[in-house]
Image (cartoon, rainbow, N blue to C red; front, side, top):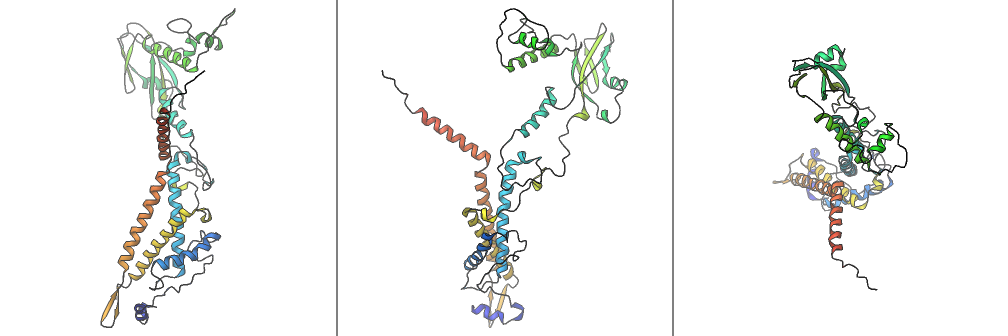
Length: 398
């Protein structure tokens, strides 16, 4: 034992236990016992205790820590490593984890991208564009009055009996027609050239009419049919209307001033039906990063790269603990002088080392993110294309 500790051990108030150089880990000696049943954790616990003590100066310097201190730091370092890994995985894959059962353990799973988040997003656009989604559209009409330009949808809704909670947020007008709109499928005939390519076939399939004799049809992609239908709907809105209109709140103003009676048709939705973006989630579903079901890592499954990080973090935590212990007594009196302790240096070094270790691990994880990997794949593919362009073409002789 060093003279320094011989001196202050004689002072009762400073009789701090010193590590005796021996370590024999047994289950139950860590605060939480997360890894006590892991054979490799138990084996490494004693090695880590000796490693940290030696790095702190033992046996040349007495270390005011006990074996349990080293085991505590070791358990904390393993848990920190697992938390960093799982937090990164959740952050990189949360869209694919959202909505999963919280009882589904994710530690030993491979998370692959799915179209579910994209489908949810497109449903919102489809609702607004009226080409799908989950919001029902309704139709209504009112009669034009000669000489009257302004018409109230509020009056229409009240007279139609729409009251109560279903109508509490009002309606939103999506389309207005001077005459009752016919479904585009009923008008599948090409608006310019009679039956268009693919139009006759679709009309027959829709029951518009039968065809006999020797007739041939061109096979067209479905996208062509969709373009025809969209063209018909656009013509209904632009070419077939004798009136234009403006919306001001729930009031419709018709131009020009009506000079004859008729019907104005409109399509609308209830604002209550529009998704607010907030969906009630069952308690057993993942809805934030805190309930994605990741457990503490299995120490025996951590590779040598991860374990080296854990050993270094354990040492940094031990430095921090030793600094706080020595900080209780900033100096030790000796005859005719005093000895200053190095608690400040230990805590500063521990803080810097912990920060550097976390930054190194996070940088490594960022390099393995899905976006980073795809970027490197794209660069690799581009490089291969440039290389292949330098390969001469084969010359055929014969």
